[in-house]
Structures are given as C-alpha cells and as structure tokens.
Length: 107
Length: 117
Image (cartoon, rainbow over all chains, first blue to last red):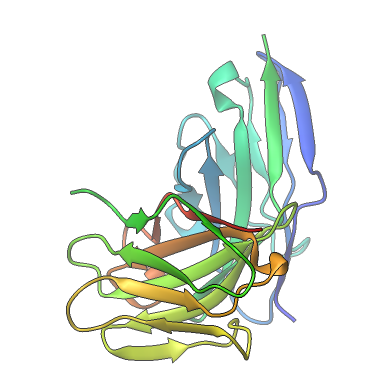
C-alpha cells in the first residue's frame, strides 16, 4: 500500500543548528515526492519537489530509492523556519500525506 | 491572483445539521481536490473533481458526504446530518493539470474548520 511516514511529531532545535526532517515512503513504482510547509495560521505551501532538485529557503531533499526516503535538510535553522512540515507522495491523481512534523527553532 | 479561496474559515454546526463548505480554485485551474485533517493526523484525500465530473471519490465516506464542482461557481463539499466525528479541518486544493504535475503542483486554500457541537 502507498504510505508516507514521518516518524517525528516534534523536532526542536536551536537557531543555527542543522535540521533533518525524516520522511519514508512506500510506493510501487517511480515516486513523485513533495515537501509542504504550513506556517502558523497560514495555508499549506509547496516547499519543494524532488524532480526539480531545487533548494528553497536553504532546504534540500534528496530522494533515496534504496532507503525509500526523502528527508528534508537544512544546514543552519532559522527561527522563521518554525512551522509544520508535511511530506507527500503523488499517487496517480492524489497526494498522500504524512502526519507532519512540527519544527520548533529556538533563539 | 487571489489563490484558492475557501469559505467559511470556521463553521459551527449542531449534530444533525448540514454543513456546506465552498472552494473557489485558482484562476485557470480546473482540477479541485478535497482533503480532511483530523486532529493529530495528516491530511487525508477525500475527492478529486473536474468541472461537472467526479474523477476519484475513493476517500469519501460512503454516507452523508457529497461533493460537486458545477460548470459555474465554486466546488461544494456537503456533509449531511453532521456528527461530532466530522469535526476537522477541510482543505481544498486546485491544480491546472492532472496530478498537479505542472510547475506549481497543488495550491491549497486556507481551509475550513468545522466544529460539530
């Protein structure tokens, strides 16, 4: 079955520390994966998608098919990165979301 | 471009009443998706519609829930005879192409928070 797992509900770091938000997936086929971010009281926004291989706001994510992972990383966290982060997998016509990880960045 | 507009932002209904949630997609988007987020859970797919057609309703509960996307006007998610378990945030997203595989993927609305009392 297609599934996205985000094992951490909450991740707390200090400003300037590296961040890694974990995402594992289960999918039979070639996956298309996304990271969405939801800042407080705002709508979900697309952060990045693996096929574009871009870096947004200093975040990157690499698809590792061997480990079926798509972890989100940032070398130096900023306070404004505090938000909910959702990993998502495109399954034909719909997105399958993980349960999300709340990132708290302390000053 | 106003983005995806959902209204109302908050909706309170008594058990047994009907709830109507509206979603206006981004200009130029003809594909609409509804997701539900229960407390402490991720977003769960409910239904995918194009104008006047339901394409995939595999995530819709079998009873009391229906959705439409008429030729004119917003998409409507309708919940009849609401129960406490329907309390959740309901998000709408739109895309210009199948699977949101255009450059911008899905665009989400701000959601409607339904509370059943």
